[in-house]
Image 1 (cartoon, rainbow, N blue to C red):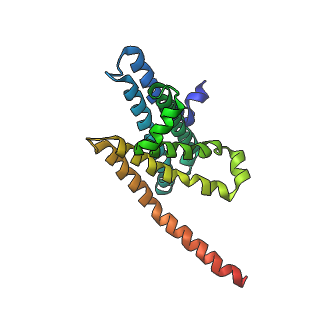
Image 2: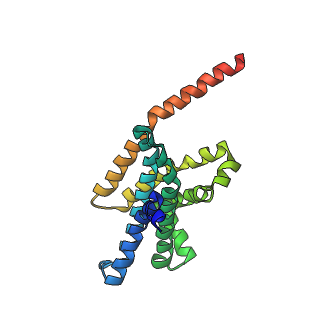
Image 3: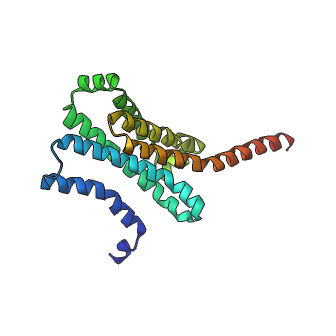
Length: 207
């Protein structure tokens, strides 16, 4: 038992469960407000976005701090983001649309923020399904290309939040700024990688 409590992965796992635990406690204590369905849906959506941002921050933090061990938690964080996205989606189709396929399709087509959010969720599914080491080995280079979709997913998530909020845009704009910063931090490494690819292409014909 002591080994479990001394394992950082245990504490990362426990922290990732806190938002769900909070919702359960609020549900039993009557703290979900006047519109509990909206409160639950928005809370799960918010934590999905937080999970995506934290997942995207792992690589820049690892490179900036030199702590290579941070990469061990990226998959867990990404899967928790997917977990909260699933709960967010289930809450929508269950408590909001009552599993009515026609109403769900109509909502996705007619409301742009629902369209964008649904697209982000659909793109998340293959990333979650291919998150195992076996799939990494099986897909090879294609795995990395596939998982670059996380950037598009995060952008769609921020747009979904921006279009959802009608009055106070402070919170979604904060996420937009954070996402922009995380993407900008990647630029030096992206440029370096492109230069390395170009250099290898120039050398290979001569060899």
